[in-house]
Image (tube, rainbow, N blue to C red; front, side, top):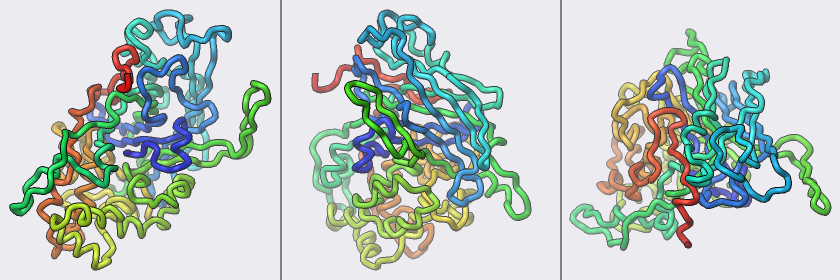
Length: 464
């Protein structure tokens, strides 16, 4: 979670595993949109001697749909190459790395960036260097300086960074996957009854772990479509965003230590739009298929959104706590509220002053209404907390997407489409009990927003 190891095959291929996606109007530059795609999840900081990196044989892409058809009108493509300075050394670095061209750094990674607009390719940059991994205070003594050196503003207006960051996702995985245990929730009194107590405090399972991030800050004028009488301003301001990773179809293993070679067309092996979609909506038997398809094919999975398995589990795991949800489940009514949130966007008229609808095509994308200004005092519960600039209107790094998703599934959002439905008292309290404060590395106020990655010297693995 949000999409760490979420499908059987991608769990075996972490270099191509898209773990989190963020899309928000930049709070410090509101004429731009920031897009962040994380890969290579669950990195222990002490990763030597072979430190984590992007895959040279993986094509990473961030896609933007601005007309609601579930296909990208704009794609940013990242392709990486790795160079070894000293082929006779086993070390990642032989002294402090104080600049991106340091002779002490033995394994360096570069990338090219291509923008594809309506099928036309435009190479924006070639051989931009990534920063090294955050090894420790002797090897990378001024890591923030290296990040600044590796952050580029292109002549076409985009700002870009690709490299290691602290994982900003927060979730109590050990509890949730132990039959849906929600530790703080189980200590609440609901309708005069105390839900059985779970021992211990919530634990952020992804804290003190790193990821590799691709971060883009793009002028809004470059990704919005122009409004006209057929496409009003609200619709023209809404973007659908997802990320993907692709590999060549054929890989030939090298003989006797020779290099592997890949050939054939690229095929998609991973994608991510809304957090938790493939994780908790798509059934196990279809997760790999989902990863291979474009969002335009997501009508195949609509029935799992209309009748989510987790909604049926909550009344079973917490007897007598969700009677109204249980009744709704047994009625077999399609969850139109979840279809709107996850597959079509929320149409105008359901929430005062808000829409991020993209039309009738059912597609899992992060939908962001870029006409809604950033909130100077963001609410972690996003739209559910009255903050229209937060999830599910895009996703900011501090949004509590697990609690928001759980509360929506528990029935909090049903009255948007059915005024006669009354959510259970417990529905608005469902939570794993974590927030951005449970991420040790603080988020940044500026690009690339995710915190400084944990170094191996000060953050040994828990098993030690």
